[in-house]
Image 1 (cartoon, helix red, strand yellow):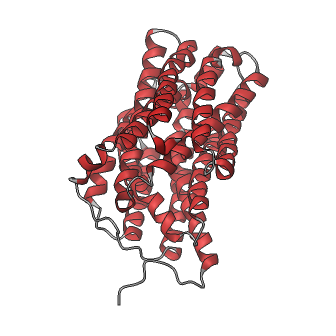
Image 2: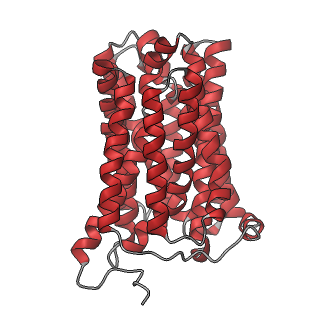
Length: 395
């Protein structure tokens, strides 16, 4: 007899545990994506390369996720979801072992390729899995928990990863992430139900989806937003230390505050997202532009930088959630594909931002990354204004 894809009605408490577990899974996966931002200087010093060269860790990772999200999702489209998730985490853990023992920068990059491939599949299936295990009427909460896991990766994962790296070396940070991932994988095996794939599409579905002008514009908006953000954020640690003369401990504090602001943004969205989605997107787009524009000025004071980190982190999370809430409802029968493409577009933006930031550092100055990011963010604001005027669904 085929197991039911949904938990029994009397296991509502278990469903909450399952949602939280998916949030923890998101925390682990996003921590390993974000944590190199806090370790760039240490890794560069260890391998005797420049910070800009080390930044290729971010670009390579993001572009592999962008390029492989859709192909891997199609390749695994019919696979039972729990088994696929466990396989993804197995690759994730093995790749972290390789990161720990990497004897040169090229081997470290190879280990990041394995992690990026597992990331590509994870974010293609994770939103749909979380929505399926969520209790009735708690779909918005399920997405908020996933977002909170992402925020906590910046709140706890990045600063703790930085602290562990300072105390024990950057390799210990990756070892810790691998160990936590192993524990999470065991919990997934024990707590998650069997979830037969609900995907009934194929590569032929892609052109159909891309004929939807709203979806295309939302994807383009996300690409521009994350390009703008990562132009500055990819190099925020050396930026704080060298441009603002912020101490190592103060830099860790700012990263902690930035991540905490993401939780604030998630909470604000959970209250206002359904009723004021359009207003949130417009206001957040404006505040993102202002945050990047004033970054160089704010870095001269730890207090002004703290306030900026709060605003910047909150509005980025609100933008992500507001757009995700629209994107995931475009085609209910192709949510895996829609989210796979969504994850790919975001990571394409992350890679482009890291590359643009690295180019700015190498050919202009480290202090210019905020202004360059602001230039890109102004394009995102113009695109948001266009979408609000053009599409009734956003009004």
